[in-house]
Image 1 (cartoon, rainbow over the protein chains, first blue to last red):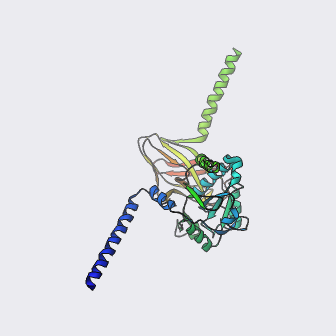
Image 2: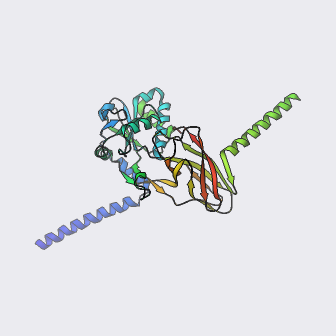
Image 3: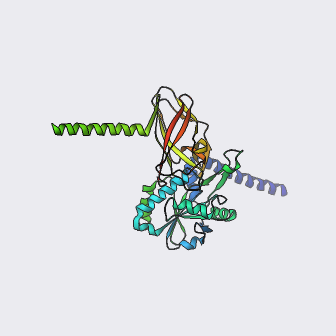
Length: 205
Length: 151
């Protein structure tokens, strides 16, 4: 009796594990972009309690009433982050009056370097309406988790530990005026496409 | 007659102007044409930047960029921004190949010459020299044009 019970238990466990292994295998066989889309399609909570580039304590509530477009990056990022922020700057100009309905937010994944004053200087280089947010290592980790954003330090040269770069998710999150996630955009959507999509959201089409 | 003369002069100016423009924007070394060499201006405290450019290989043999150096930065490396499961990573590329008859575009979001330990801020309108080291074509000096941040 006991043996049969153990055996049944084992079979159930083994089938469950093989099913899991099979789904993981399938997932890994998908093209990278498809995997990324699946990962970003899982609903996020999207909450934060951080410090903005003017040293004010802010949370999602601060921006209630307006849409927010949230992107995670860091100021030492030489390629992707300035490209995305440049696109956002163009989008804000393209949107004209409608840009008042949108707050673009950069949340740093490198709070050790990106202090309030560093962020203040950085975001103002792109557009006066872009908000930069920082916090403690722990606050940033919590925020990233809430957006399902993954990031990590990467050492380019073991002899120069200060020259690290960051790997990070580059999805853009559009949150509604109620702070709830509406949709995501790919980082390489381009300014024109982003403008079009955002206009459609604001016009309610 | 006067009109014809004026027309010819205008044409000449146009033609000369355009070739001058071409020369200013590209460097030819043997079969390689390197064009559109630019970087984005950097915020005050940032010590990293990326240089973008296009290399066209009109020859029968491939060539490779094996490195770069500039007086503007303590270190210059060929980097590739790569997306892995939605996470963007930067990888150091040992070299970048330009196939025979091929074209290599270093553009935002992909391959770039990464500058680290900038010796000064890159400001819009500035031009600074960058040396690309090719395996076959040797060292080539380029002039990098700094564009505004929102480029």
